[in-house]
Amino acid sequence: MIGQQAHLAAVQRVRDQLATLPHDQPVRLAKKTSNLFRNRERISSPGLDVTDLNHVISIDPEALTADVQGMTTYEDLVAETLAFGLMPYVVPQLRTITLGGAVTGLGIESSSFRMGLPHESVTELDILTGAGEILHVTPDGEHADLFRAFPNSYGSLGYSVRLRIKLMPVKPFVRLQHLRYDDLDSCIAATDQIVRSGEHDGRTVDFLDGVVFSRHEAYLVVATFADHAPYVSDYTGQQIYYRSIQQRSDDYLTVKDYIWRWDTDWFWCNGALGLGRPMVRRLWPDRYKRSDVYSKIIRFETTHEVKARIDQWRGKPARERVIQDVELPIGRTAEFLHWFTQNVPISPVWLCPMRLADHTAPGQPWPLYPMRTGETYVNVGFWATVPIEDGAQDGDVNRRIERAVGKFDGHKSLYSDAYYDEDTFWQLYGGETYQAIKKRYDPSGRLPDLYTKAVLRK
Image (cartoon, rainbow, N blue to C red; front, top):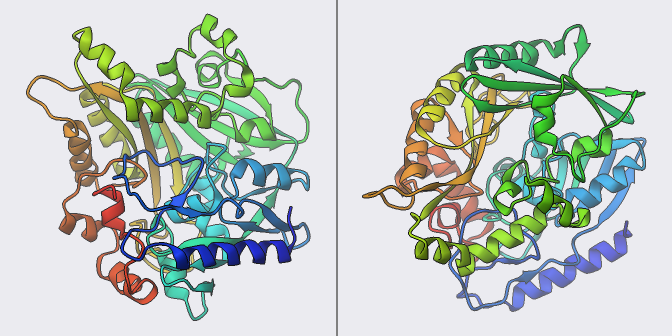
């Protein structure tokens, strides 16, 4: 942890640097890691160096809060909070997701069915705006409009330099129960019942997510904090976590290993690198079994297209990247999954139920993200590539998915490729509300707007 004075000095350095950047070029962050999955237009101007804003400032175990710099990774944050027997309300699945990134870009995890989304545990922020100001932002203060519009703005309204978040107590272990369903309707019906009651088989449920392997094989993972464990499993080496869901009905993990259970294998996406093969897995050092290592390899391939050129030389079809998280109302989720499993050749698929934790604000309290208070949604995550068929174009499958998501009353996250036309996009993501707030806090347009970033990839 760093002290308050060191934090203020780091903020001033970033603010001074912003003032020196070219005013005719879009401002971007200079980051070592990124969990965005969309290619962006290259620019020649330097990025905003936020390297120094990556620390926990303080933890208050009495108030159950933490003050955290915006570029702090959840890996570093969790390491600090677990020492106090605490964790953030929601910890996104990958170690190098930053707190500021999860709040401005949204994040979810298996606690989201009861604790909401990461931005809902934020009580106050300090935001560096495109105008170069540092604003203290709270839910009911002078800048309450920015507080509400910041989630899902993806840095287009400013960058968080400090956030105060709520923490919750943890126990040393987590017990997991894997419930199999042979049809999608039963799986989603059980999800709805658990979310409504907060219980399963007479026990309180602390975490809930699931995996669809096929139309006839789906699982819910019902997890509960535990003081003791008869054993603990280890999925940071040779054993693969998501395969264990199919192989055993009960399991125990340390709370730390539960939090990062998906990171070791990047859910299942490192299978594209051969990590599902026992020989390759043994040769791959455990310290490099991390999502940020895999993403660097994929980004290298995206830039240089080494494998794509080899596949072309071997006569294989080009492939379209389909990396999406979409949210469906729970009443339409089974319908979407039936459509998806019949039309998109991708499996497994992740399920994560979620509800807004803020039950006081009526309607849609976060204007840039179309979720309503009191409704349950299910995040459906799928991350793979599919062959581009003869006569098709790159992006066609993603466009079909976007249309299907709209048909089933859902919406999609914007961390990856989006293909909406501009009118449709603004109808879905804030429209007039966004434009008014953008004009107030970035009047010169130094930060690219949300459509420019999410769809035009600039």
